[in-house]
Image (cartoon, rainbow, N blue to C red; front, side, top):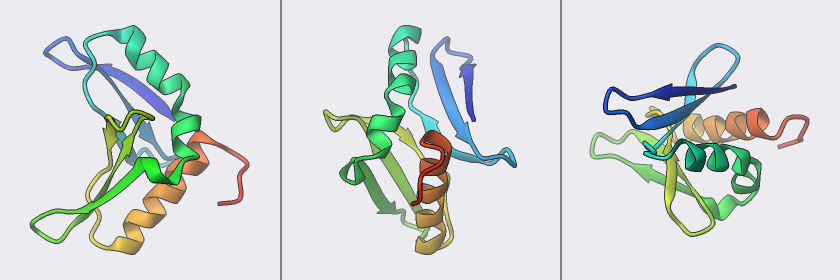
Length: 104
C-alpha cells in the first residue's frame, strides 16, 4: 500500500507498507509533488530491475536496501533489518506489493 505524506518542511514523500502497516520503503523527500507521483507511477518498472536495488550494511551491522531509478538516483530507503535474510524478505515483500500476482 502506498501512503503519501508531507514533511513539516513542505516536501512530499511516500511510504510503501505491507498489510500489517510495516514500512518496507520510504522515499526521499520531493519538493515537486508531480515528480513524486511520476516516481510512484514507475515503481513497477524499477522493482523489476534487480540492479536498481543496492544492499548495504551500516556501522552497527544492520542491513538495509535502497531502490534507485533508471538514472541511478536513490528514490527510497528500507527500514533496518537485523539479518541479511530479513532484508531479502523485505525486498520480496516489496515486490509483491508493487507487482501483485507475481511468483518471486
